[in-house]
Length: 342
Ligand code: SF4
Ligand code: SF4
Ligand code: SF4
Image (tube, rainbow, N blue to C red; front, side, top):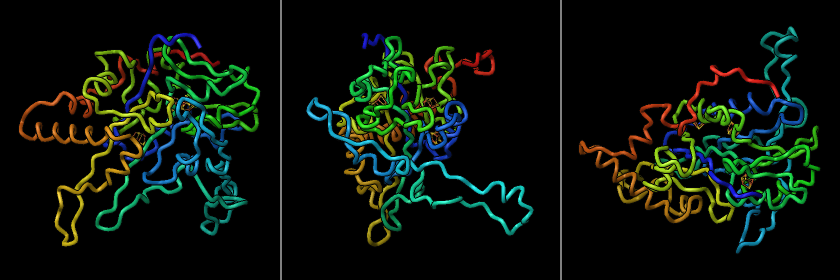
């Protein structure tokens, strides 16, 4: 791996994600429509707390511990949720009228890409949940790359995007085992490992990633880590309100999250207890590390400021008044480009 000169990154503001899956579908329509990719969702959005995609991925190991590769395993297609087959023919062309309804054909699924949608945790009236969108983190220390004996995984010098060279891949799947985020899929038809490419053909034309550009919640910021005029540097380094997910996995992810604020809890008398957070601190710490509590305090402080009529640059960035400001210069209209089919 040559020296990475610049690193592209994404910040996702979890306070604005509405779980609509537009990101998921925009990625699917663009990149995972070939044979063997039916079950792939390079972008996934899961309800938290939940077991996620693949099922219980946070407990599968991988990444690094004390600087050494940490044991793990390859998730199964079923754990990812597989691709369900439906009786479309019967419903739409079978002539059965309202007697036929849409259902999964054959073996009934036991898990899916967003199986525990909106379940969350906590008891009434203190239930809570939030959405967690995930893509490959294009890590600075990618466990997938280190695990590949074929040197089939590259981290690009110019922007740090991590790509699998499918011509070199021989299907050993050590990358799938090593990635602690379980963001690599096995194409069982083409016999290669595949994953999010950070939309590099768009990036090379100055167009933001499809999952970011199509997001109606204005959740996703894109740009170079070191661009001091862009949103990434400001949110991660200047205001320090965006954190990596499971940094203890040791891969130094380049996707960062603004953690979710939540209303306070109701006490036993049904009164609001301002001192008790609805989402338990321990849970957020388990995802984003101990600094998450400082971040939540910063965000609350900024909200107090704006309510008192003062200005807050960090909230202005997060609100994203100007949509194109979210994309760190990658704001070209994809419709203005003549795309070549590769
Ligand atoms: Fe919808 Fe955006 Fe959340 Fe994706 S990240 S689910 S597009 S709001
Ligand atoms: Fe590799 Fe996983 Fe990091 Fe992506 S998230 S670069 S697949 S280790
Ligand atoms: Fe898919 Fe591009 Fe988003 Fe990666 S960056 S999840 S390839 S849309």
